[in-house]
Image 1 (tube, one colour):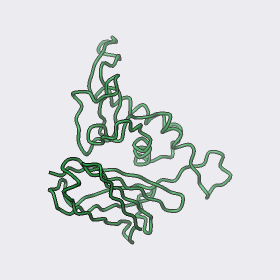
Image 2 (spheres, helix red, strand yellow):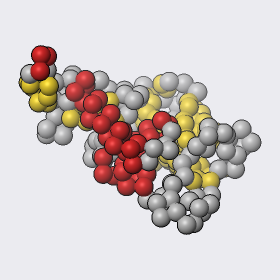
Image 3 (cartoon, one colour):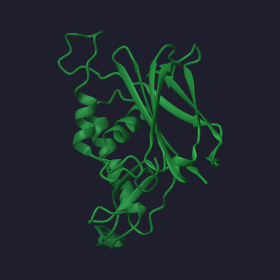
Image 4 (cartoon, helix red, strand yellow):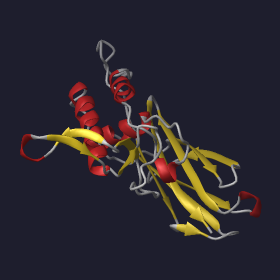
Length: 220
């Protein structure tokens, strides 16, 4: 996972990278921790932010050891506290241990009605685009692919797609995946949508299983 750093004021650290692959944020500026030779000291860097996310991942995994790495990653991203709504600089938001713990321990599994702590069901959702960036008036092709917990493609899953443009316009569409577990949405960029970063969000459901993904692209 690509982990970014925030300060104690909940703003991005100046050294923290940005981009469409950024997933989640954690504290990384002026962190008091262990240093060389058994000492303690204050350090800054995404190397200080990453252990926060790794620790939350370990905590959540210990609560539900049956999770795959993909399911665990999705749980952290799905429950991150998105206080910024700026995926290019903050990804999905600030890692949230309690929310992630609740997410993986409070699902429903109709196949095992007697389980007092039933397993939530997940879908793995991915978004791909025909280009990594666009120019005004070009057509975006956004393909959403859905697979289950065993990475088997899921046909006939209901997918809702939301595209938020640089100017704040929201375009939405929905449909069902084909036999290959995918569905493609198209949108031609209009002048009123503006130049800048566009956010694509996709939510998929199949029975009681759900999944979510997001992707950011730039329009020049």
